[in-house]
Amino acid sequence: MPLARPLYILLSAVLLVSQPLQGQTPPNQPLRYSVLVASMATLDDARSLQLEHNTDPVPFYIVPVQVNRAVYYRVLAGMFADRNDA
Image (cartoon, rainbow, N blue to C red; front, side, top):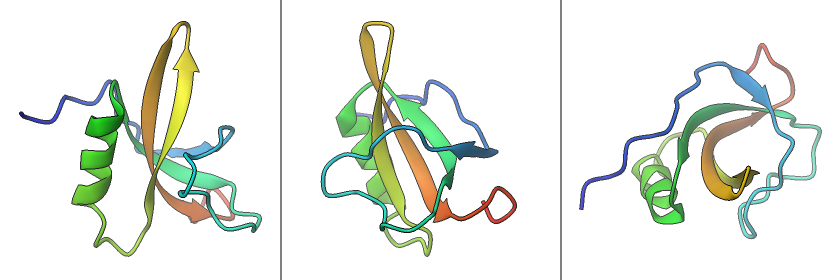
C-alpha cells in the first residue's frame, strides 16, 4: 500500500509543545526546536516515513497531536537549541 500523502509539509523550524510518543522522547536538554517534516493521518504512515530516514544523521521522531476530534502524527526532525540551528 503506498504511503499516504502528508497533510502538510513545513520546512521552517517549529517550537515543540507536544510530548513525543513513548520511547521517542528527546534527551533532557534545552533542545526546543525541530523541523516539522510532515503530518500524517495514521501512525503507520508516520512510522513508515520515520523509518525511511532512520539512517539520517538527524533523528526523526513522531508527536501525536489532537486537532478538533482527530489525531494527527507529526514527523519531526532534529532537536536543536535555537531556531537558527534548526
